[in-house]
Figure 1 (cartoon, rainbow, N blue to C red):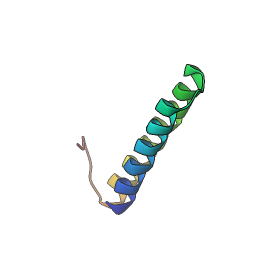
Figure 2: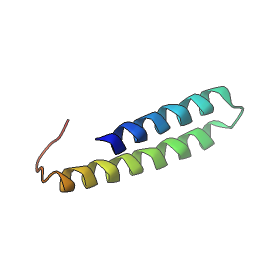
Figure 3: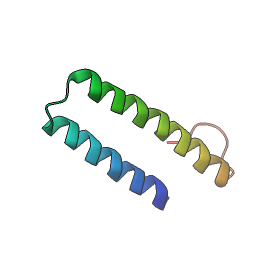
Length: 57
């Protein structure tokens, strides 16, 4: 659970940085795509570690 909380905080920080930066929109999309993939991996790992099957959330 601590890992997911830290991950969520990191995503919030990245989104805030992107909103405050002058990066082109495609850079923000790339960051969000990577964040989405990381989130899926983290959630899947947490589910496996907690021995949970089926939909979570």
